[in-house]
Length: 252
Image (cartoon, rainbow, N blue to C red; front, side, top):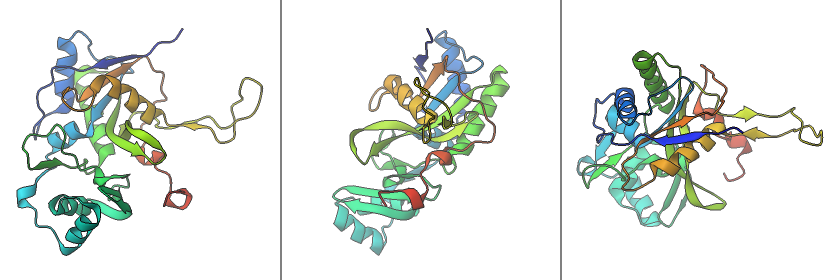
């Protein structure tokens, strides 16, 4: 019987600008006797990646525009926070009470452009999404290769809500070394029926599995190792493959 292990990378220090995420994960994994291995999938929170890259904004340095003030009135949000969201936004998709769904400049559709207050030092500090989450994943993967000689896959994750379901789940916003979607079209089911539309969001499923050991507030576990999953390795990949094109998006 197949088995997949999901391992929290514990006792990582608070990430700060300039930190090498790969080296911190490598050392912590060694210390807890779960050293990185060939074929592992490493899931890293976007907060950790962004903090290492310096994508942090202090609200005391933000002056809200008139547009931000108007949107703040409509949504009930802090005008300073809205201004930060707008700077990261390509298009506003939906607005409502305390809700602002946007498409970011990097093509991710999510709440508040991914701007995050959780697990960030400083009451007035916000963490943004990485400028290029795929590039963030690639760098971590390349650094792990240098440190260990192992080929691993890397997923940068974020917590997203879903339009027709309660609760949030972890999803992949950046990938490296792993095909994010398993296209099963053309395969046959148990009764010989040919699958015509079946595509599995592998990277999202792995990100959600990792979240079970990483947690949300308070745990301080920004990375996890998934071991034993036989994924399709691919060098030329992007998490943008997971985003439904606007012309086929029924919610826009």
